[in-house]
Image (tube, rainbow, N blue to C red):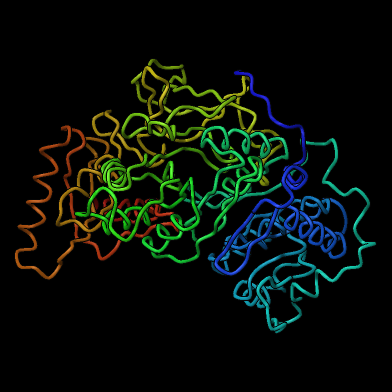
Length: 533
């Protein structure tokens, strides 16, 4: 295992350290407010006092909605500082998702916005562990049901804060956070991340992204992500939160704020690239800002052509990384200095190892050979809420990610697809993502999704669902045939599209990943019905 040093602190101790080093430095800035590290640390103390007052005792699970505002980091770190475990809550999920998260994690106290509080009020009889709901955006004091406005919840006597409260003390292997998987390959699972996991990954991410105390990060994200929060606090960097979904507005804010790092989702970066198409290297009226050093994409894959086009327009590298909730979450990242090879997700972050194993024999494979990606490092989770103790890694520490890819001679990782998404045609592995990337280059294709259609002779054949840019144009069948013919000329024999349909839309997760699981199930049913005729 590569040697890698990181602080032996509880996660909330990183904020305390930042406040001691640079109390007046900007920690978080929004359109309407800003907080220094000292102010954020003091607010975290108040949240910690609130947690100790409302929770049933040490070790309580505290739900924290990932809203894009300063209340999130204070509640997140405050949950830990108050002796609890923060449970990340996506405020965009629906009733069934909230019930699953709150029940699986046995959440006792929740810090959520009004919209989520209203839903929880209706669900209280199904959530017996939930003791209190604190509404974080109730400025007028009006809250649903028996929820509590944040101002009231924070009005706890200072005596309620234990002296020297700084988290769980020496037990860095205690759970700090529970983060749920996206659920693209099954029901979301609660991932238990320790203080050691998260502090290590904060240090790894800061090193990989080249963050330091002079850095200013612009977060153009719909929700707060703990990777960006923890790495910035570790480095003592300022975070600028942009709630405006307009990509051009976010770019202008980055310039005004002197942002050095711009974080965005692929869907938004794709839109930004389209807006900037045809302009000069530096779009007039929308400068990237002279301090900007990199645009960083995460959540799902950004098409290499889009990354290249955006990099050319802005004059800075557009880079990607790789990880998952089980890895706290980052394991790989391209370098902000050069971006790495086109299409890769970069090398491992410090202190991390990666290898590729054969899908069947599980033996390690040579460079450029495709197989399952395995990772090991200090950021690997403690385990799942619904599983036995342990990280899920083998006795030698290697964790199987469920992703398929290959390594080049420089150690850069190239992802092919999810293990559950790839399929075999005549024993050759087909990547739906690779076929989709070819289809997407046809200007007549607005969106597309690819899965395997069961076939008794070949195992499976490629099925494509295509969203046309102009579905009302005459000659629909001729258009589809032309699109497929053009794609098939660029695909290997075993990848070629054998079935195609026009679809109204491609169902996607909040971060833009195609929801293939339900589609595969539907197609299996249709294939079986065809075979029975």
